[in-house]
Image (cartoon, rainbow, N blue to C red):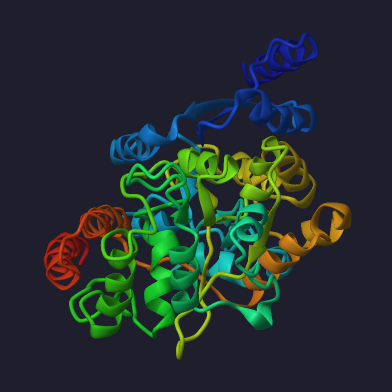
Length: 417
């Protein structure tokens, strides 16, 4: 009987009837025509593996991942992981430890900060797919029109936040005299997100969470954290150099591209995405820091993880290695513009990354970059802190708002102990 079965199997294989092994992949909802180029590359090189990739819009992605993994099944086999959620997924055994699948040399191909973001309790559990940085974009024509000297683009001449505030005051302009600014001095691309705002507090030496990852009292309520957050609130309320309510990064980018922002604190992806504003003349200054403090920049981006309950672990790891490998990351950068998490990609594309703006970001990734807090409850941490930052931007008292937020966050974090 066994011999007959084998003969039948070989006959089916020869006839091309045997169904390929299928991997279910839960992925960020990037443009399908971009994503499928990488998927097709993998399938062409691995004809025995079929990729069923499901592209989920950003607004639904995290809930979808939570629901699917909490169900306890073996699918998805592979899924996209927002870097700071690594600890949360790993703490609940949603991520397969990958140390036995990756050599030291393979891990060393990524930025150290990216590997740290993909590691939880000493185990490597999510593979970096991209990284990020941020800086201060400025509109050269607005500066020149109003006689304000251009910021330096050199790291050694990094502006302080105090200097940025003074520049923003000079460049908040009511051109038609109707009592409302037509040019805002400073826009913040991710206006309420800890990703872009925590470096302000960290520049003053504030910690964003306890070393254990389970407590924020005494951290986001510290004098240093409150001081930096008070400065943030003044941008909107006292100095009125930044507009409230622009919590969509695409709209913030549109404001900067069309001359409604003199300066914009924003991400590296703007190098590619601002290209559509063909008349825009802009520069990039390093991410500011507070006088007396230290330079800190944000970093981190998407990672890729494997479901530990997958029945196709070997194939899943094979796909993860492929899509985070040098050649496909090069291709993804050219398609989508997200900063690679692999230094060897920057070395391979000197024409793309030799310009001063990219060189500034690469330097920051290597020297001043700090990942977001390492806590199993990052989703709750971020949501509550976003609400606090938004309230402060509308005029709420920073100290009381942060104290209330801390109490709420710490209640949520207790669930993970």
